[in-house]
Length: 235
Image 1 (spheres, rainbow, N blue to C red):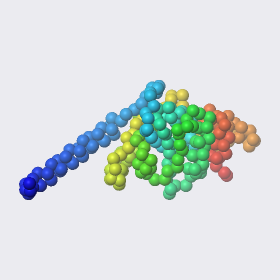
Image 2 (cartoon, rainbow, N blue to C red):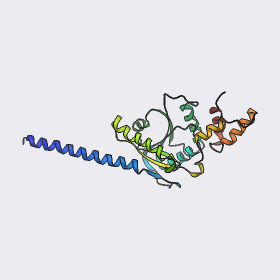
Image 3 (cartoon, rainbow, N blue to C red):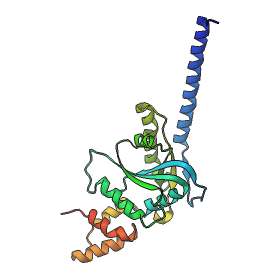
Image 4 (cartoon, rainbow, N blue to C red):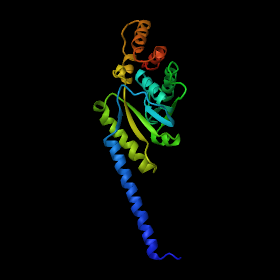
């Protein structure tokens, strides 16, 4: 039976309506995720490992510290594959290169249970492009609390949501937030860098020793000396 022009017109408008409905549902879902993000509170629940799921925990890791390691240990138990991404801006100069930071993180993870399924990678530019390339299904962001970090995190989530849609065009990777272990909420990369560049003694040997003792409370002991040397600003 030959289709009439009316049948073709009906099929066209049906396709348009279906497309618009899909776009509307997608928009509602994405707006909901931005306005009401999923937040995993502490203490973290010990859940069954999600098989065949790759997640990304991206940060500057400048430098990495106990807080980062603690989160990676938890994620390694929950997901099949975890990628710690050291992100960087190629137009910015760094005292410690992204590759050096990645090596630091690998050294820190050697003394933990997160060695079998955690990879460390250095990524330039948009992390969402990398996520699509490695078939990651989830972004993990570590926060102290939504009240303290929510404003900055929401701005980043908007970029990670609309960037893929506009530039891809691909469906964005979902982001969930993990409230860090309160034991390490005072630990920050900024604090570590400040310690590395504060002199506590006129004697260089004593000064290095004091720094390592202070840093060993913020990073694994076996890498404290390496962190101190890397982040000491040469005068």
